[in-house]
Image 1 (spheres, helix red, strand yellow):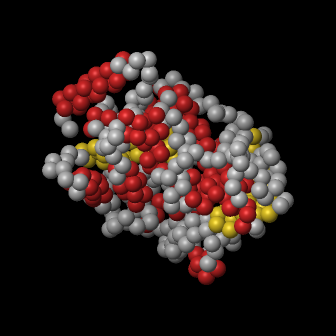
Image 2 (cartoon, one colour):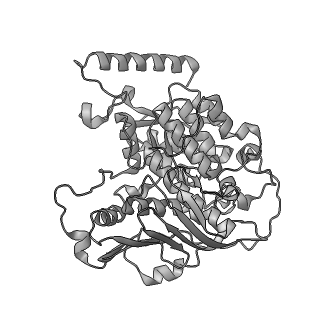
Image 3 (cartoon, helix red, strand yellow):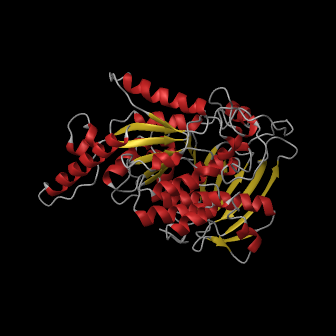
Amino acid sequence: MSDSTCSKYASSRRRFIKSSLIGSAGLVLPVFVPRTYLFGGQTPPSRRITVAQIGCGRMGTEDMQSTMKHDLCRMVAVCDLDSKRLESARSKVEKFYKGKGESRVEVKAYRDYREILARPDIDAVIVTPPDHWHALVAVEAVLAGKDLHVQKPLTYDIAEAIALRTAVRAKGRILQTGSQQRSAKPWNTFRIATEAVRNGRIGKIKVVRIGIGQDQPKGKAPQSQPVPPNLDYETWLGPAPQQPYMEDRVHPQDGLGRPGWITTEDFGLGMITNWGAHHIDIAHWGIGMELSGPTSIEASAQFMTGDVWTVHHTYHVEMTYPNGVLVVMDNTYPNGIRFEGADGWVFCARGSAQVTSSDPGAAAQKSQQRKPLEASDEAILRAPYGPGAVRWPASDDHYLNWLEGVARRQDPIAPVDQAARSLEACAAAWIGMKLKRKLMWDPKQERFTGDAEANALCARKPRSAAFDIAQVMKRAGLQPRPGGK
């Protein structure tokens, strides 16, 4: 889109919004209004939310395609540091709209996400780079006035989560986290289970047992390789420590297979935040700790050594919450969440979905043929609810829920405050794994109590000032605030 086109678009958009607000006889409408409110059919182009995809790998492609299928938005730009993935994403968007009968489709491709943030005609961005890039891209997007969908885990570390939450609330943006287990489709199991638990159907909660799968070492020693010409590896490293390029630590050069950065600790913390962010989020939902966290953590783990991958594989974590509930994560548990109360239990999972084919527990879990939703008594799950029961807001589609949140200017089903708390619990468990001793966490102050060594691991020093999120916040006049909403 040319500069002149952007200017005309922005100008006409502002005039449309102004006339909508003035001509409503005192009714104040949001900037965007879902088609279900004002339009009987297809959303007019002038009212669609313009969206850009940042990060076009495995999950980025899924996020992009799951969002642009909704008529409430228009995908106008894509961004990636790998030119092959960038062109593939651009082509997918173009093909999608041409498949709907459009003869001329313009999708701008960028290597630098800041060029997207500088475009006034882009309303929202989907943030799907590797975990170590989440916070910097997201905070800068917020400061640029964009609404966001951010893949889980929300950020790489605890300090980043607090910073991002602070920025989102200070600037009034809408953020949805990729905790899609909160939305009914395709995993209504989590909503049914947690509603039963929150409404006391298994009595006082005693223990929550969580299986998040397990990664195995690659079985390959680290060895540097030439950087592919299609990848801007120096920028890809971002805030992470300087190191040689290895395809097994970045992403496959052919296809959109599972990336190696997930199992490389400089870029992601492993299963504890990868699937941990999903299941801890649901555990918090069930025990009513969405805006809190553990008070004590005891954890142990074996970490991969002498291998191209560096994250943990086996693990055992015990966290006690302010309401007395004990949350236990162990690599021997089946993937899912089991709530155990004084009067029964509930188990919920994604069914046959596997964490990864390399998970040594995957075959055993498949042979067990666990149901995705089980309880000690069927009535716990099926009995009708009366007035005043705790019920979750409707959300059949996680991406549509985000778009409608943007349209209505209200929080979606997985808002930033609760996502920050899920990340904190997972990252605190990782710190416990590293220090191998009991830790005390203050969920109000969002820091460890009397433990400088543990608190030092809540934020890592960036590779250079260019990637320092603390400086970004400072320049914006924002002070990260603990104990948020």
